[in-house]
Length: 100
Image 1 (cartoon, rainbow, N blue to C red):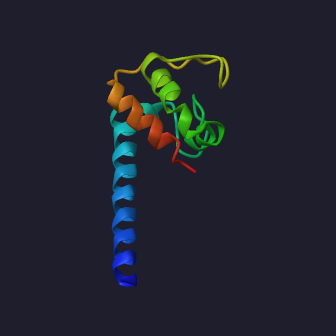
Image 2: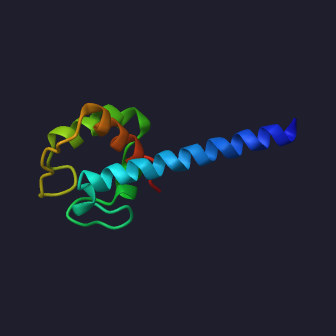
């Protein structure tokens, strides 16, 4: 029984890692990484800093900012609107909040 539990947990971990990489791939495909980095501030904030500031309950708010853009939260440089679907914006927001 214990071996089955360990195997299930390992499979869940692998699935989550695969999803995290898929969403990072989406961020790269949508050119998010042109202005953002996982660990360091570029034009926009580092994703680890965004993850430290926001909670899972903020996903809809972040998804909307990803789609429509925004300004004033992280400094004077505005984030332009992005060509993403609502589903893609939500996936990206959820992924950003997992970055540590």
